[in-house]
Image (cartoon, rainbow, N blue to C red):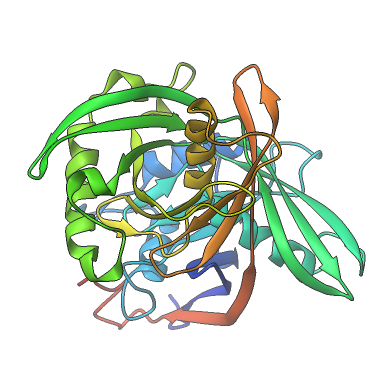
Length: 344
């Protein structure tokens, strides 16, 4: 027996306003030969808010996403070994409700962290490539450096493909037509103006409620069944978007992405930006020489481009910034009656 507290150390970043908490130390051994296997095992062994028993890994996720050490909007990742030596690292993405299969803003943060921590060598001037194994495949963070500092990071995603167009969904605000795209996870895209909404912070409660409603309505949608893996199936996020005045480089849109159980992406959503790029390309609104200016509900911006074509869809690149916000040493004492915390 020991009275020593459990210790978890993190490095925290934000990518365009969305938090990303990177955990390297304090983790139990995570079984599995690949990142995808580790995620599946974590989900199978893990619990939820009402389960009487949880795995040690899931206890850490809850500790870091619940008050008083976290909050309901927290997001992060457990750094794990990659699938093979062609990648620099692997990651299990998590949020307050579980584990996700893709995360563009997290990939941007991990790219910056890998270079700034010295895990991946980088030039003072130029681009360092950080290859990361995530549950949906291998992605790359292109970290652009100038005078020894990180300027921005470009997230190159797995191939993105359209799953369905104009699926009618009945909501409390009327019937809307939803487009579906797979970009490491399935995203539903809805023009917010067709719901009588605009993407503004003042309407966030209405946007959140509508996003949850649409996600629930698509729970059994056949178009969201991944052909290769049930793990990748199901709608992960609902992107409520609206058009702004186009720029000289291409389309300009503002969005809010509602995911998990009503969690809001403070950034323009990296993987969601990939989904929007594929849909805009299919509609003839963006080409290889154009750029999408993608704005979040907080006013931050990602820039998205088509980088090529693939038998499984289009290759997309999403550029944004990531900044380190702190380094933390979290403690959990055995006599702390709050345990892993609470959510409000």
